[in-house]
Each structure stands twice: as C-alpha cells, then as structure tokens.
Length: 277
Image (cartoon, rainbow, N blue to C red; front, side, top):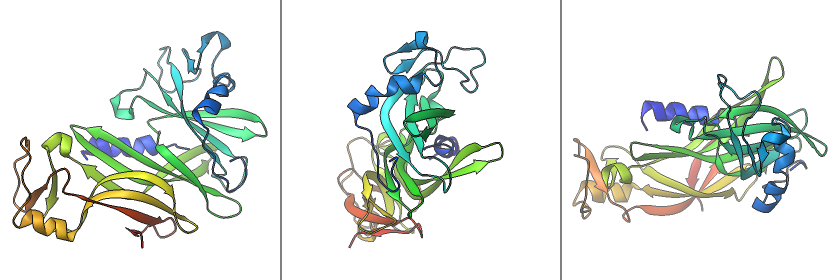
C-alpha cells in the first residue's frame, strides 16, 4: 500500500462503529431499509429525505456551504462498544461529497436509548464491511471488520478490531487495531509478488466470522506459505501472459491460482493469527 493508502485505511477506520449485551446484531437489508427514515430524520429535514437518502445533511463535516447528500447502506452494526453508557449503532453511508480517498462515504454514528436513536456524528472514510459483533465480556462487545482500499491497482485489506473511546466533551472516537493485513497486486502487476528472503505473505482476506473460542474470530486467507515461496524463488511458476512489473533482486512471481487458501483464527486478546487447527 502506498503511504496515502495507509493513511486512508487509518482514516477510514477512525470511526466505525444488539442492543442486548453480547448478542450480535446485523440488520437485514429489508429491516435496515424499514428504519432508515427514522435515522435520517435525526440529521435531515423531512423535505430532504428521499428513500434511504438525505439530499442535504445537517452539520456535515467540511461541507463548506455545499449541500452534502448521505445515502444509508444496508450495513448496520450495534453493540455495547464502550464499558459505560448506551449501545451504539454504526451505519455505513455513501456521499457525493466524499472523494476516492475516503471511498466515497463514511459512517453515521448513533447512540441507542431504548427504541430511540440519537445521532452523534459523521465519520467520513470510516466504513468497514462484513463486520461482526462478538462479546468481549458481560459488559462490553467488540466490533471486528474487514477493511481495505485499492490504489493504483493494489488492493490492501485487513481485519481490524475497532477500539472505541470517549474523549473530553463526550466526543466518541474510534481507532483501528489492525490484526491481519493482506496485499493483492494482481490488478497492478498481473501477478502477486513475494520476497524470497521473507516469510509467508498474505494476499486476500474473506468470510470473516466468529471464531471457535471466546474472543476469537476466523477468516479465510489467500497466501503464499514457505513452500510456495521456495517454488516461486526456485524453478518458478508459469508466468501469466500479461505482466506489468519488472522483478527487483530477491523478488518472485506467485501468479493467480498458485496461492493457497486456509482458515485462520485470530485471537482478539493477543492479536495473534494462526492457521486453524
């Protein structure tokens, strides 16, 4: 990932994100749509609401006088992400006011008080995907998401635990704790590339879910293990027809289809990831 992409990944996660303690909640598309108007009305005049969109969101950060739209997506996540206080609700949104650097959207953060939702703030660039809510203990939940960004054909992805904190003035902040990172360069180079003097390299992450034990999650990892790297750096794999990268000393190609895929378990306490037994 280029430096700007790393900054984006951090920025995007700066604010991600049932109601029952320790119970995962992922709103289905239909149910999420049913509640969108009530959520929109917390920051949008009724005359500016069209379906799941607000054409002019109030107090949109950095609007500078522009009419910034906010379109809520199906991804809603709720849980007790702080040790004290009410549950929080995180909703991904899209906005034409956001550039590619923030993946054209962000997160709308709400506080749940009974059946009511109180709007807290917008966090541009903070959207994660395919998130899961897992219980940390009897008082608190943990939000874990798949996050990522593509720049110049290189797709950076990660599994991130979202750390919620309350700052002075009751301002809620969220910082990412990246647990596992991957980089896929096929669109940029025509093939993934590994370093011959380094260890295993991860290319892709998918199918995030609760793990086999408390405080764990599981994810499918596309990767080159030591044996794959030895092959790539020795006799080599058949090269794809189209390559856009000149190998540097110590590099080797691992073309699409040559990687391995395995289920990994990530310990949320230690942050360590290992192939599932």
